Each structure stands twice: as structure tokens, then as C-alpha cells.
Length: 252
Length: 243
Ligand SMILES: Nc1ncnc2c1ncn2[C@@H]1O[C@H](COP(=O)(O)OP(=O)(O)O)[C@@H](O)[C@H]1O
Ligand SMILES: [Mg+2]
Image 1 (cartoon, rainbow over the protein chains, first blue to last red):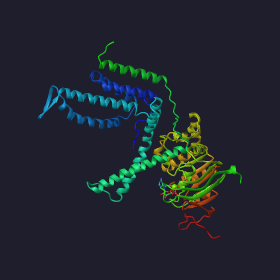
Image 2: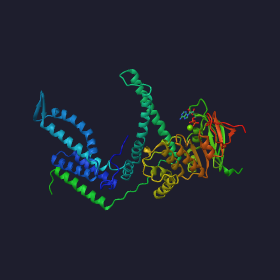
Image 3: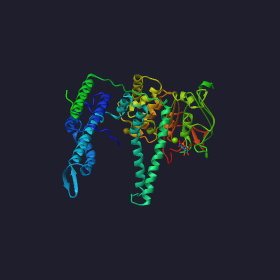
């Protein structure tokens, strides 16, 4: 269901302290998201690509991930240039594409791809369980972390349950059509899935109680910041500062 | 009978889920230190319910539960005894909730107040004991059914319980894994209750088998596990042989 395609590896990026990666990913994304100048967005994209290369990720699979997001962005390309006020750049029949519109969509395209690449390089290279523990050490509230880890663990179980139900329907000749019978069957499917998930949650809680759970969650993981983490953090913060200066045209 | 040998003492327990038909009906049951009891019975006869009542996961409508010589009423009482009684759930997907095997096995020891290092050691050793070394960093949901069962067993054994309650431990296992679990359980010197439909398994691992029906344990119909190698139709169902 959720395949952690990129989480296992032995690259410079994989071996960094996950907390450092999370912090860098957040700051980098925020700076990219608020930047508007291409003199900042272009170098940011280069930085993201370098991170991907450092993580030694399979290029094909990374591209495949980008395809989904860019499918959505393609849709924006058909829409935004014609709905923005500004100087006319081109016309398609009665529609007028504006220069401002095109610039705006280009910005979105750059930003999305840059942030996605950075996320893949920095966050997708952390196994989900480690990500959970790193979040806790960064003072994300315990409840949020539990929610995150449990969702990850049980989304697979619920998906299997869903597949079992769908198969049970299929082997008895169910073919979805646009009729009441189909809608009713799907409603039952969703209903049963909810009930089963609830039951499951209850049994899991009981199993945890049996093992001495009292509401506090302890962890095995201890992370340590090493020299290379500090070097990486410094370099990345400098790079991000550079982007900020390019964006707001600050000169030293 | 020394009273401190009485580990589990259920007196006149009644329980029902929805209030109509009682699932446990004035049931009494005792487990002494060193007892190894097998429990058989048709589906829906209340075997799982019984184990959950013992663990305090379900509260009986009437009757008393005495565990290790103390009456257990509320969550607080049961909390203390859950360290001593280990329950293996029927469905391992209920038991394994951590992303990795090592974390899941270490969950119990951590709750018992062990340091991360100690918990890690205990977990690794338990896994080695079950012939599961190398599983530490496997993702729990990607294990096969048999592997999940074994890891679930590890999560229970890692808490070093005095009593072991296993709910259908061999269900859905292939012969090889079943043999492995049987061997492991034979080697443990714990008091235990094993629910199973598999009489061969119970013969190997327990010294008394009770049958459950209609919310009661039929003490007078105690089955004595006996060895006889033969096959016939329905040979797996409880059956007797004329001498
Ligand atoms: N969560 C529940 N809610 C309502 N009824 C239940 C629940 N769990 C079990 N039952 C009912 O209680 C009876 C005993 O169930 P159970 O103890 O699981 O039997 P066994 O383990 O012997 O197969 C069954 O009739 C079952 O339908
Ligand atoms: Mg059962």
C-alpha cells in the first residue's frame, strides 16, 4: 500500500541525522514557497536536484513521482494564463493569455517541483518509523506522532480488509454499474469498513493494555548529531540564506 | 492445596456482550501453578471471551476474579497482573502495531520500565530464542502469517510472564511452523492455558484439556490427551476410543 521506495539506502543523505533533514526540509520549503523571483527559484531547483543526486535515488522512480504533481499543474497551465488580468501575451480564439498569468503558473511549476524534489531527497529517505521518532524528538506532540505511526501501520491492514470485501463482492458476480444496487453495495462496503476499523482499534488498544501500556509511549531510538550533520546543516542554511538574499535582492 | 499456588481463580463468572444471551454462564475455573491446560470448544463458545475476562479487558456482570491470591475489580488491579500474565491474541494484526519487529517486541519491556538498552537486549534475545534472529528491522505488516504469529509470541514472551494465555496459536500455520511453535511451547516451564482446535498440538503441549460449551467449562468431561497415531474420518474432532 504505502511503499517506502526511497527510505532504504546508503548514501550521504540517507546517513544524515533525520532531525537535521526534517529541519532543513521545512526551512527550505517555506523559503521556496514564499519566493517569487526566478533568480531565487532557479538556484533553489538546482539545490533540490543536487540533494536528489546526493541521495543516489533511482532517477526513473523520482520522475514518476513528479509526473503526478505535474499532471495537476498542466491543468493550471490551461486555466491560469487566461484568468489573470494583465498584458496580453497570446490569444487562443476568444481567450487572451496574459504575461502575468504565465509568469504565475511558471512560478507554481518551479516551486512545486523544487519542494517535491527536496521532500523526496530529505524526507522520503527516512523510514517512516524513524520519522515518527525524529518528530517526537523535535517536540511534535506525542498524540500527533502516535496518530502518524498508527495510521501508517494500519492503513495497510484496512486496505487488506477492503480488498477482502471487494473480492467477496466480486466472486459473487458484482459488477459496478450506475444503479441503486451498486450504490447500496458500496455504502455497505464503506459502512462495514468503518465498523471493522473501529473494532480493530479496540482490539489493538486491548493488546497494548496487556503489554503494560499506560498511555506513555517509550522509544528505542536515540539519534546523535555528528560532524557531517553539522557541516551539512551549515551548508544548507547558507544556501537557503543565499536564496533569501537573491529573492529580496539583499546585498552584503 | 496451598493457596499461593492458586494463580487464577474464577468464581461464578457471568458475562454477556449485549445483555441477552450469556456468553459465560456462571463459570468457575482454577489454574494452579504449573498447570498446563488446553481449552477446546466450538466457535463462539466463549473461549476468547474467557481469556479477555481473565485479563480484565472485559468486566464480568457477576462473579469474582482472583489473580495471584488477590481479588481483581478495577483497571488498577488488572494493570498490576498484566505484567505476570501474557496474552497472545487470536489475530496477530491486533498485537503487532509498531512499524518494526524490534520496536514491537521492546514495547512491553519499555512499559515495564526497562531502559532502551535493556529493552533492546531483551527483545533481541527473545527473538533469538524463537529462531527469529535477523527479523529485528523487518516491517511488521510485511511479515507472512506464520512469521506474524511467531513475532506476536515474542512480544508476549519478552515480558517474561509467569502465565501464558494463547488464543489459537497454531491457527493458519503450515506444518513446519506449527512444529516449531509446539517445540518452543513444550520447552517453556510456565503455567498456561492454550486455546486450540488442534488436539495433536494440545497433546504435545498441555497435560489436561477442558471442553467449553454453552458458556461453561465442562469439568466432568475433561479430555485426557493421549497418544495414538491413526487416521480416520473427522479424526481431528474431540473423540474417544474404547480401550
Ligand atoms: N465484540 C463482541 N461483541 C458482541 N458479541 C461478541 C463479541 N465478541 C464475541 N461475541 C460473541 O460472543 C460469543 C463468544 O465469542 P468468542 O469468545 O470469541 O468465542 P470463541 O473464541 O470460543 O470462538 C460469540 O457468540 C460471539 O458472537
Ligand atoms: Mg476465539
